[in-house]
Length: 387
Image (cartoon, rainbow, N blue to C red; front, top):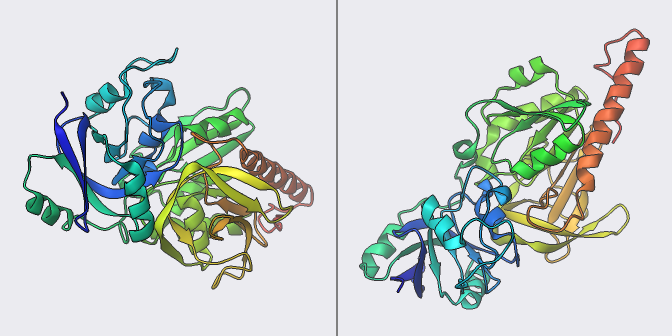
């Protein structure tokens, strides 16, 4: 029989359940994800660092866990909240149950929670600090501990999850392009999709200075997803502007999208409860096509379909059909573009993978421009970008 456990929120509301995964107490921002599958990719996404993740789908763990579905070295979420854990799991790739995977990884979880009531509460009151803890503890002391935890606004978590050493992901087949990828919490699937398109990807720490990137003369710069407040990660902004001015294509997703916005004058702000799941509709403004997207973010770029205040060189390319928030940007003069959602789609639909093809196309065009400039007797550094 599992030990009784509680999920307590900073406003005092408490949900009861049973210990699931590792024993102990876990603190973090309580958020919810609406994906029906892909719980292992969710758990191992570095963007969930510092968060207690609630899965709204009621049955989680039915296909077990395996090494192939990890998006990083292991679980990154601070804790896991589910309604029902199945007694059995079945999948030809499964090597263990989700419960044993969480226990082995030291992730504190809770099952038996009324996740529908919890989700409705967060949607009204907003994402907030909370804790998963044994039910036998002192409730007043736990609430006091919760309220001493740092809030997500102003929190720099990207440096915490970034690689400390540069490493290379080789291209699948012949190397066509050399890409540098800022690791603010990169998911392995993003790197795999770049490699599959002939990119040799050098993954670099979040603290890498612009001089080091310029010295390597990459064909393109990829700016990854990541956790925390984009306002607390100012060190990438100079790099984005510098490479854009040198005609180097820049592609950002999620936190990378927010950093691109801030690099050219936009503001970012915290959403009430964020967007997390694999079913968010996004309209592409160029042709009206609607993409069903995978998302995981608690912050957004301030603006609307009409434009971005303070950033006249940026134009909006995608908007969220649920709430009208900005989901995509591109620079009007440089080959810089970004989306708020996760086109690597792990987990999620594959509607948006074309964006990796666009990045490769931009690098191809840049190569042609540089070749033409060399024939003209120049170094190509002043060649205009075409977006």
